[in-house]
Image 1 (cartoon, rainbow, N blue to C red):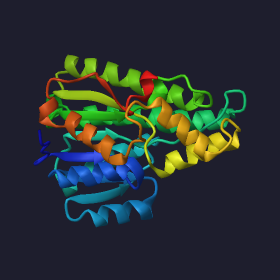
Image 2 (image 1 turned 90 degrees about the horizontal axis):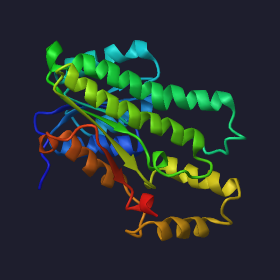
Image 3 (image 1 turned 180 degrees about the horizontal axis):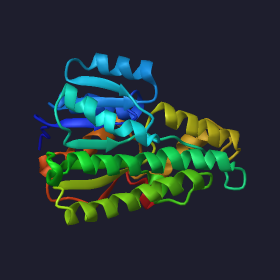
Length: 263
């Protein structure tokens, strides 16, 4: 099955680098037009420019509600009404609960939960068929940390559990509002990105593993598919859930972790 996104218009947050940048590249390659957003303006513009005329960039702090209507305005100005929104933007703190500062946790909540909440809120308003929108799909990025109770992932994992709950409730409400919008989420596992590199170094600094080799052996040993994931793995799953091939799927959380959560 080849997933085709011809005619789709997507807004993807946190798309300057990492998973978000790959999502944008993959969607453009499949025929979609994509508005990338990120707080990192220079990197975001460069990523969008490399994708050609079917991509554009808008600077955005997803935790700032005032900026959300303008994101959809810019999308409509460039490409027309959005029918896909991917709430990918997020930050990470690796810390024992006893050592995590309240300000750090509040920042996680603002970006990882508040950003997704605002994305769903404004995405539903602008995309809803009941409001003159095209309907479509909202996809939120949760995490394997929502499923596994891993040491030092309490604050981060708590925010990703909230994303899962928001996803499921939004799927129900979209039906009640006749929005013609499907709402799903992904649970990425260990994915080869700059954020994961920092996460690994944090775990080493906390003394949970003696060295990088021991950490890698632990990850691979718990993963049935015996490798870490790639941004391409996440993009393939995202493309499916946002495509018409998944037209009867909503309120679902899909793991993209090589089976690690089973261990």
